[in-house]
Length: 310
Image (cartoon, rainbow, N blue to C red; front, side, top):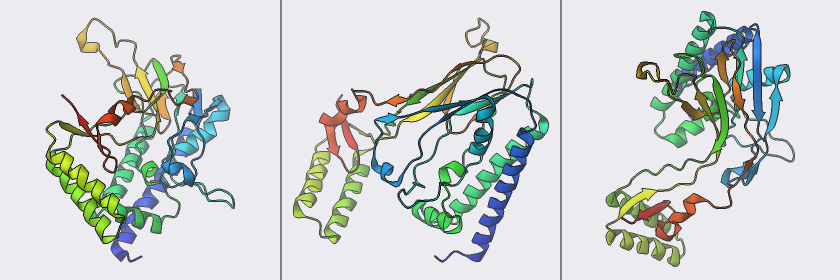
């Protein structure tokens, strides 16, 4: 693959900075006193899992000192496991590391805070360099995987979270969520996308019934006056909810609303207070999938396009 020399040099320099700061952060964190630590281990994704929606995900729990070393590793785990003779591990499906480390300190040490801010910025700098020197997502993918074998881009750009601003949480609750985004799309955009699909199908000499099916979708859209939404399937993922003691206080100036975010990387908590923790449990796919209610209003399976009747 042809990559401009200055782009390759810049990306390698950014990656060297990310690695240096990652190593420094791990060396610094290992010296701090630990109060509590839990890591909820999830199965490795294999290549075949990329197109499957899981029906069951087993969670293995590590606690205390047993959890500390793998939790530290997961903070800076940027590469997929190497393939073996019988298994091919995915670099597309992002790994998730729900968990937390609670350090027995009243606040985050300045050196640690500086290292985390620097590491998070180095990740942003790397991704910005990659983005401005690539014409699209596919080229970004090709460039980064040519230079850094087995890297997982989504994990590289994750930001490490310190859960102590403006104060430390009193409770951590881990849970599974499958939040379906529903971006609105206008009729003209949808028709343009379908016409492109139809043109591609013609160039590839797809079966006539497939081309006719796309034409039917285009005709349906021309006659449609309802709201249109995209309901693209998303994978279930672990989440974490951070709750605070004064979130229900009477003084609105001291309200701290609960914070919910993806549990992709272990959260760092600096507090001497005991935390209430609701652990992550095994995932079982619900018998009733709420997204199925849209099936009767499906217009285009290729675009995951639905009509929402008013």
